[in-house]
Image (cartoon, each protein chain N blue to C red):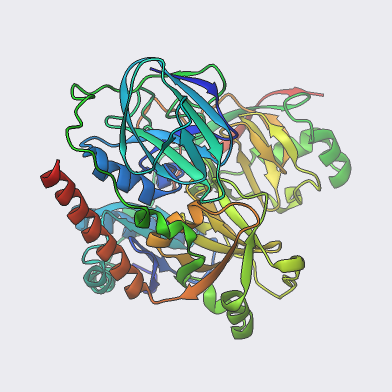
Amino acid sequence: MIEVINAGIYSSLQGQSRQIGLNNGIARGGVIDQKALALAHCILQSTTDLVGIEFVRSKVVLRILQPVTVVFAGGGIDWYNANGEQLRYLKKWYLEKDEMLYGRPSKRGFRSYLFTKRGFKCQSFAGSKSTDLKMKLGGIQRLLVNGDILFPELDDMEAEQTKKWFLGHHYNEYMYSDKIRVFEGPESSWLPKDLLNNILSSTWFINSNSDRMGLRLKMENDSFDSDYPISNMYSSTVLPGTVQLTPSGPIILMADAHTAGGYPRILQVCQVDLPILAQKAAGELIQFKLISWEMALKLKQDERNKLGRLRNTIQNFI
Amino acid sequence: MNIPIPHIQPLSETAILLKWEPKIDTLFHQQMLYLGTLLEIEWADFLLECIPSYHTLTLIFSTEKDIINRLNYVEESIKNFISLPVKMEEIELKKNPVEIPVNYGGVYGPDLINLSKLKQLSVSTLIELHTEPIYYVYMIGFIGGFPYLGGLNHLLHTPRRGTPRTHVPAGSVGIGGEQTGIYPFAAPGGWNIIGNTSFRLFDAEKSPYATLKAGDRVRFTCEEVFV
């Protein structure tokens, strides 16, 4: 059992995204940083779908009420125990009863995750335990608040840790990148060429009204001129990573986005770069880099193979 | 079938978009839905979902592996299916329209009186205009269970409110632009709310979760008027 003493700003139980449900209007959901989830999955050698706690950069305090093994993934928070020792990311930590976890905001990254080997006891909805905050389904059907008690699904081998090892910091290097690779969206040809080039060559800042639904972008000094003649379109399907061009500027849709939209879909962020966006806070900057869809596929395949090899390496090592 | 070959392009690493010329047309839409059903059957092994909108179908695959090959086959499949002779009677959905009972006005429809003044129509005329048509569901999207309905009488077309409400109760029936619809969940919203229904658009305990789907027909009925 884990007691939430200080829940932080916007914490919720999140895990896998939902693979089906768009026909019912159900958002994909799940962790914003899929790479953090995948790395934790490898380290924990989980065989079930993981659901963990997603925190954003803020102060968090947790008390361990029953021994449990955890892994921290992502960034945005530095974790300490009661002795002031830092608990590093991407390493299994066996926590005893009455141990405390102190999370302090860190400028390295933005979203921090705590995973246990078999997830948490909570509601499953449409194939995932991730919390859909709009529909209040899945997880504990809402954000975490002070005083919540969470129940990890326990594993018989909680204390097993005969070899001390961890994944190096370079596994978290992705969060320092500001290059977001994109390919053209269905309505990219609607834009005049110089407007599209302007969008692709500009520096964009994450606006403060960004959240799990989407990252709203603005230019330095709000100088993006959105006064161009662009036809309206009938609502069509959108996915996490879809970049819509709205009258107030571009928005990159994320996991909790509505499933249909009426703004032109000008770009699509390649899936391997979505974790970079997951780790960006308001005020941080990004730039787009245009690639082909075929390249995006190759990047995804390469990533999948790398994670597969990592998982095997860990399996053989422990 | 009497529909052209769509433009085919990738939407994401695991999604392919079939796009036709923009139109809001039930006859076209039903054929498009039928094509979607045929594709779902043909590709059952790796097609997770086929999502319709007004004039597009989005094919969601279970993996990005081999999707480039699939892209080629998709075009072939579509050409074959479209060239099949099909009678409209086989495609047209014969179900009776789903009835949605609405309590109009009062605390249920806070914008009804304003709308009546704006349109210079009596409340009873407004309700008649709203309950007369049989609406067609073009797609479910935006949020769980939300139906995009076509067929709103043009006299009722009303721009969204200048200032959206921060909280619109679940079941609210409203008008936004050229659309009418129902909020399945409480949410912020800018639609003009004329009534409320207890009809459940979304049930997490049922399968499928959304009560309505693309191709369904719907009609509003007047339970009671509160003014």
